[in-house]
Length: 204
Image (cartoon, rainbow, N blue to C red):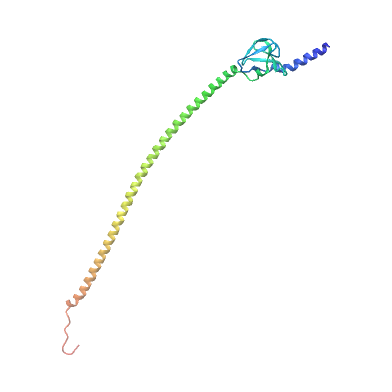
């Protein structure tokens, strides 16, 4: 019979050992009462604050209670609904604050990088605008020169056409004068040349 009890105790230790090693916490309620047994009918032996780290010794599924040892070494029973594997706020808040600090630092660094990039983009945009303005001015000057050159070409072409017309008129005038002088010379020339006198002796 003693051997049977020893075996049962050993089996109980082996079953509850993994549960005792697991880290558990009291959920984030204000506090919960710890009873001497697995129900509210047992006397209250104290209270456990929210977020306290506890060790679960065993669980009574029917009663919905878990036997725990709190951070002060007190052993008792609390509702299983108040037991969680998630750390409480008083342990999570410092970690969250540290993570928030890292995020803020990273955000500040990203904002500084963004400002530096924005400043570089603004300077680059200013340079591009200055180049564009310079090119537009140069293009405007070239267009003005092109228009002036086209106007000058038109004027020269008109002058050339006028000179051609004048030259043709001169040639026509010279041709008319030459033709008229030749005609006049042809009419006058016979009168200038003396005629031969005919011989009256019958000889031709």
